[in-house]
Length: 563
Image 1: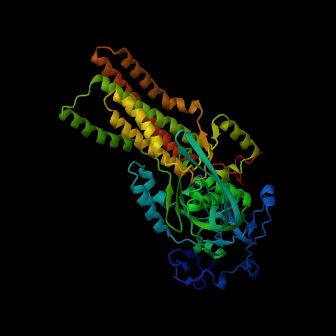
Image 2: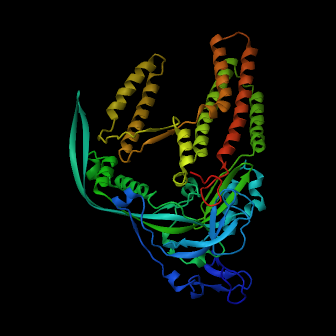
Image 3: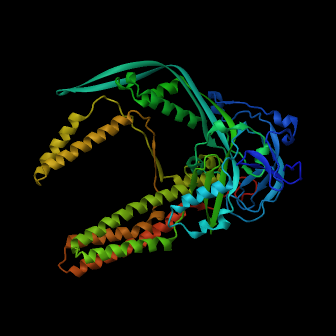
């Protein structure tokens, strides 16, 4: 901690003034003042670029010669989550698992970042943005609005790897244009050559396995124009997460993102578009040309809140530079069904007063439609929950799994995760007008048997043009492999069984076509009851999705730090 030169109290960094400020006597000092220098050696700093050469990428490691500075480590004895700070006051709760135990404390050294973006959003600003976002969630539990909950917001500097990608030189791309003349299709092939000079800066990826990638992506971007040379004084009054993710983990991701975006911008030029060159062609040419990727280490400001509920924990994070909010919002089931009741009662009354009678067969079909919609939602939600539970998309966390955890992870995804290879669409230069007319003519002939040939033909013509437009636009993007995640049947059966039964029984009744109306109404009521129960289960599953299991990080203090 730093002592105020006037009263001796702890002086902290104030985001509102961007100064070091004493809460007791009001003294304000620049964070760069010499009084905050720990030592001349520490404040010199080393600003090295980590060059992602092909050799370095293959080895997956690079020398890190950044200097060190002294910090206090706080480690959670429950989950192994670790924070660092300049202060020496006891930390009374863990930001990651919500544990209220006093964290274990030790003194050590950390690598000095190349730069830091100081907090700009104060805690009051953070709370205001949080409440504004929560105000739009009318079914959110009241516990999220409690002062005790909100007061647990903690300012944390999150570690990030920041990449610069450069590529220059001459690239050669291949293109083709197809044109129909009568019964023949003529294909022209072209070779397009151009000089490129690509320079992208500031692509950031969080460097902590404790900070979920989905959260860091949700509050992005950070503007590195506000960055400044790192000084430990900026940490006073705040915490920082420890960095445990190597810079090689995201180096290729940053490069591929740049090449994809550059290709998309290049291919729209007339020289490329009129010769049928796709973004995939250009990206492939850029890949062959090669790109130089360098990385720097920075600390970015994040206001972080954890909300523990039983054996699960949900998070709310606020970008400490821009105020952008991302949060997990569960649903209060009582509020939800009260809202449904408020909407459904007036609607039912309106139908009765308007003498609108729904026939029994129509009612059964309506029940089937609702059951089908709920079934689709239940299936999708189960897949999403499965992906969340195994942290499939969290690259940082997955890189730190132990040998035992990796083995268990592979067993979980085996047969449940498949990759569908991307298909490269060719920019043929064909507007698709003739093809659309052909489809419309066929549809019009079929529709004519029902007396709506012209209407069906027009609809099909418009849809065909739209689809062709989408396919043509796809030529301007680099196609990506599609990852399909399907939850195990054991996770789906409890929420899909009742919609399936409702569909089966309703379909059977329509097939049998009994003459007694009470049978129709009875089956419809039964279907609605089963569907309503399933919706209640979906709300519960949503609440699972809005949180995660209590984490276990493979850091000092974790329970699962075994190979």
